[in-house]
Image (tube, rainbow, N blue to C red; front, side, top):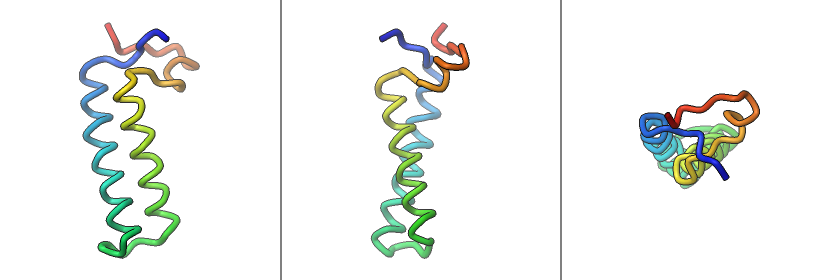
Length: 70
């Protein structure tokens, strides 16, 4: 599969994804006071961002024809 995520995009996704996943985990373990739906959504979105950063491939970018891996 061709990579379509560049270096800067990858770093932003990794940092943002790790932050969202950490907030989601903390909220689900009752360390933070968020609703279950919000914490689950944060964990899911964070996981997706981390996954796309690790694989350097984004399906949405592929559909839209965006390529930041110059």
